[in-house]
Length: 198
Image (cartoon, rainbow, N blue to C red; front, side, top):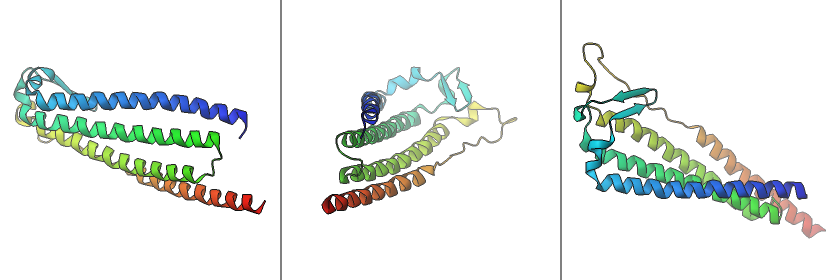
């Protein structure tokens, strides 16, 4: 590997390290928030004066439009799932950083690189599943905590739909990364065969 490629990989590792540390700090903060909201029920009486649902913002004059007891069950759960998602991102970045380090010191066609790429595919698959669970929980959260009888006048609004959009493109991406690990493993076997021949 030439010096230019090594410098590029070193810069990439530095950026990945910063992003990884930010993910770790975010993970710790969200776990803390989840525990805070799980054990402090009084915060729901003063915290939510408005809720934003995508492009719709709802502003409340009193607490009658919200089910605070349901909010106290759903919000810590959503924060916990978000923390799990951020931890998966952290592990993915750590894996990419390991791939860069191995590639800098040795060759990209190394069995460790192939194993790390396979691990990265697993993290992408797990992250996609957790993201979709988070999306479902987010929609259920807003459907559960809003008191629709008081929130909208039924003379004008008869029904409100919250669409759940499942994102399945991560399956294709994870499959491609998984296949890439086998390509790298095959390249490592060819290189080993070439070295033994020489």
